[in-house]
Length: 424
Image 1 (cartoon, helix red, strand yellow):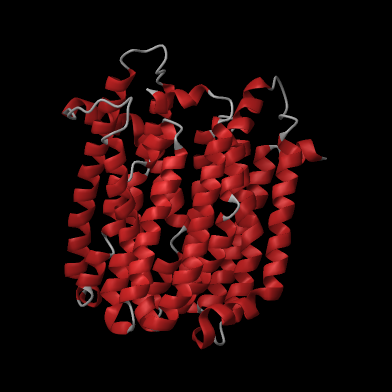
Image 2: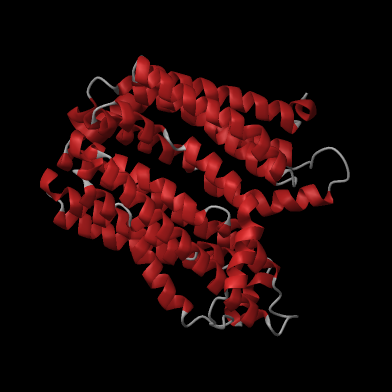
């Protein structure tokens, strides 16, 4: 049980935070290497098909992940390897039942994707591309992030995640040389998580503190019932909030999709660079809320101001340097679309602030159910207006609407979280 006993060490959250930072840096740097390469090598149209097929399969990744990852990590973290002699057996049962449920979800997603491809003529012509783009769904099935998180050995997530990405990235640079290699690009790009999952299963097979067993139908049903609340909220919020490439792909040419996807992915990577800091502080924030008798924890306001101010500085800096940076990354492929990147830079500080409010002020204080109920209608409205304006007026109007919706969401969360009441 040596690998599990590290949970009792005081510095375990610092090690996990460092692992998350390293993983996030890798997830930020590697796309900055592969994204310009793919756009330049494949061309805007072929890359547009690659991005669109990945956007479609992203919904299936969410269907396999949503709810069960959060719920499974929480259940696993509640097991005490010191006091409970059956901890290894319970961990094995939990792993078997959650994996079996994720397999059922993946099978349903595969059938649904095959049906969509067959009934959509434009998609049917790219059936092989959609099939290879399904690999991240299998990676989500095999890579047990929730288990490493629950056992508080996030360094394994970092090591295996980075290793899988590096292997597939190296293969991508070696094999992809033109638009005719589109399927290879989809296989190598989508296979990174699957490769990490295969490596993770090899590690789990030798991990102490985990006793292997077979799943039971009753156990699978119990996991499905107990995680359904997390699943609905996580899937709805994440799916709608990440639907921009999919919506653009429904109404614009794949060349436009390629340009938009390249710019948006670069800006989303910038916004997600704040995620490790917010996640690393999450346990401390939760403990502060638990120990706070009334009002808000003293540590919350100063840290919230620092992160929000840093995000604002990054957004303003991005507005100034984005045209130059996009030309340096993608060359002539984004000619005439630099304004899209500048508009999305305005979106970055609001996106980071909303992430902060969700994790620290809502979920951290134990108001997760209230957060989902309040945010979901606004997110659906934001996505609906984005799709409508993009269809009628073009991508620029859609991006403007998206940024405005993020701003309004920030105002709503600030008002309902209590930050403004305590700050002034």
